[in-house]
Structures are given as C-alpha cells and as structure tokens.
Image (tube, rainbow, N blue to C red):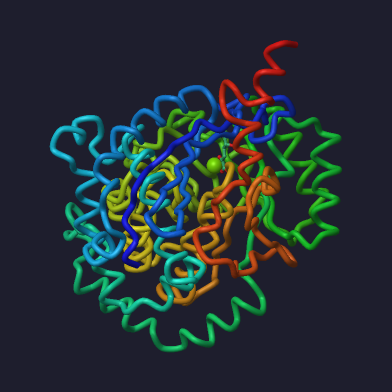
Length: 437
Ligand SMILES: C[C@H](O)[C@@H](O)CC(=O)C(=O)O
Ligand SMILES: [Mg+2]
C-alpha cells in the first residue's frame, strides 16, 4: 500500500479484427479492436494495468492524452490516492487546463478511464484481491468516498447512496456465495455481427445454443430487408423462448428508429440498443414511449460519456436498460455513481462489454452491482463477446453462459507482453508484416 507510482507507460495496441468483420455493426463496419494500454510501475514489486477501448485509428490520440495525464499520477503514493479517491478522480477529470478538452467526455475521458483503471488494478493487487472482491469488502462509506457527486446531487445525494449500500449489506454473503457457485448471467453478441453471412449466423447461433447460451444480440440498422431476414433466421434458430436483443449503434433519426423497430417487433426483441445519437436524451425518451406498447425497451450507454448524461437519461425515462462501460465512464469511480443512480431509478443495469478487454473489466463491476447494490438478477445480464481473451493473463471464465467470478488479484486487464509486442501499432509484427503484403 505504501507503493509510490514511479512511471506510467502507455502503448497503442491494435488487433486486426476487421479482417473477419468481428465486432462490425451498422456504423462501425470495420473495427480493429484496440486499446490504449497503461502500465503503472511502482517502487516495490507491484504493477498496475489498465486500458481504454478504441476501434483502431485514433488510438494514438488517446495515447497522447494518457501521456498528458501522467504527470498527475507519477510520484503519487497508492495510499495517498485511495485515502481520497474522490479527490484523485477530480484531480484527473477536472485539471483546470485539461478539462477544457472535455470536460469528462471524449478522448480525455477515455484517457482518464485507462489511467484510473490501472490505479484500481494496482489497488486490488496491493490488497491481494480481485477487484470485485475489493469492492464487496469495502465499507459502504468508503465506496461512497470514491464517488464524485458533483452534478448529480439533484438525482442522488451522498446520503441516499450510502443508504442504498447499507441496506444491501443484508444477504451480501449469500449473494457472494451464489455468484461463486453459479456466476453472473451473460448474453452473447458474437454470433451476429453485421458483417457475418446468414450461414455463419445460423452456425454460430446453433453452436452457442449447444453451449448453453439463451440470450443473443443481433446487429441491425444497415438495411431493413436484411434485418427482417436476419432476425427471422435467428428467431427461428433460437426458438420462441430464448431472448433476442437488437443493436443499431446510433444509425437512425428518431422517427426512422420507431418505424424500423416496429417492423422488427414481430421477432420480439427485448430491447433496441442505441437507436439514435447517444447524446439525444429526449429522442430516446420519444422512442421509449413509442416502443413500449410492443414490449420493446430502449438500451443505451456504451457511448454515454459520463454520469451527468446517465442522470438525465434516467430522469427523462429515456432508457429501460442501463449499459455502463468500464472504459467510457471515468473508471470504477464513475461507474459506481451510475450503478447507484440506476438502482434509485429502478432501471436494470446490463453492461456493455463488446470490445477487447471489456468483458475482463466489466465482470468485476456487475458482480459488485448484484452483491452490493441491485441485489437482483431480474431482467439483468452482462454482455459477452468471444474474442481476444487469449491475450489476457487472467481471461474471463464462462460456464453455462455465466461469468464465473475471477480469482486472481487485480482488474483482469493485464495482457501478455508477447501479445502487446506483436500487436503494438505500427511497429508490432502483426502490423509490419501486414503492411508488407
Ligand atoms: C464496434 C463494436 O464492436 C460495437 O459494435 C459493440 C457494441 O455495440 C456492443 O457490443 O453492443
Ligand atoms: Mg452496442
């Protein structure tokens, strides 16, 4: 705990997933799953690992932003940071010159997430616990002390947050035990990326059903007739009793979204995800209202850039499923704020995890949500994508379509050095050899 952070390094790591259209959707047709990958070195034997997720081009800009934040971290003692984590969050997110680049949004906030994820990883490693367990074992007061309540007290006060956490102490041990035995329910997105052929969709859904998956997300939004055909194929393959969700990744205007999704209502999707601009809170409210008679909810959050936006989505009843993201929001600190607000507004959290390292990170937050905040699994599930886990030293473990709680100390986002070396952009073998083709 006394460790002093001596150095921060950040690398641009990219995986050529666009080659096989992994991760493709109606707006991001050729993503190369990538990360600005942060390593904190300390004066003892400990290191902290963190990342933020990107789609390839532009990762170098996030890397620059991380470097700009490094001076606020290097030289600090871990104990000093965590004894006033709220203050440290604010130091990073509200530096009086750098906040002009956000504030708390865009590249600078992605960079803040990468750095803070590494600090949380370092803390959990120093305590010898996986991050979810570090959080679960924390006193409610200490949890609250990590949250910056600025701009959200009209929706959730510190006292209310504390009350929620104290109330959820009851039954905590049983829920932890239940998670260790059964895991946290997940759904899969990796069967139905938009670039996949019908044959591949059917094959992957059939395989996933055999492995115990019951909830499937389908990418839509590029072409209505294609969507009708793909959704029909998937509904026929998974049967009437399994769950389907659809995701348009911000493709439509508001009226178009309502019309398009009405045409897909016969396939009984549980939610339409990101129907329109992620900043259009009132647009989402209109869509929510229009689709309610079909029993279709609106889900959003993977590009909802901070707690203030989530606050307004909740206040405006503009979403029925909250999709927090471990790298879009300002790390664990800001995610805690959103988990508590979602609980207060009685909206289930179904996190986003479609990207490299996001499943590894998100499992910790959603375990904490169940054990210490929501105490419910009703209408809740965490996204899973079956890509790139082999690059992590403590990859996720899925059993019977559930995330099994990680056991290794930390936040599970350390990558193998060989993976980082091979995929570093532009000099890693994967990219150098590719360019020679
Ligand atoms: C570009 C990403 O793969 C995106 O499509 C992920 C996403 O929307 C999700 O997982 O949901
Ligand atoms: Mg999505």
